[in-house]
Length: 155
Ligand SMILES: [Zn+2]
Image: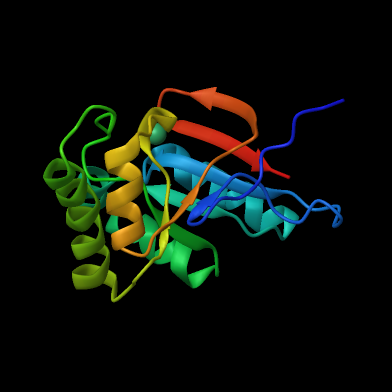
């Protein structure tokens, strides 16, 4: 008998498994690698979700604009990519809001999607993301990992 994680409240572990679909997500950008990924996705006519880091937005605004123009989704991956485990609610809230503020000010984007750095998550992160009305997107298949890109498939 297999163990199946359920989606709980604002925590999403997987999609509807009766549909044979995969949600592709890319973390830690935008960066130079994001350009290559966008080329590949364009060629294959595939949409994905990019969980971006606030600290990488400033130098890569063109890439974010391309992500938006090509109708991919953008999610929040925090500002600095620090682990959220054993951190105060204030710290966690600031990490999320700093990235949100940049997306809103520079690109007029609001996202309710959040992925926690290193998949580190605790009670404080749960409380903060719930209060900020974020959907926390976990990942059940890590497909590929480079220093600046984590590719996940969620079934
Ligand atoms: Zn990450």
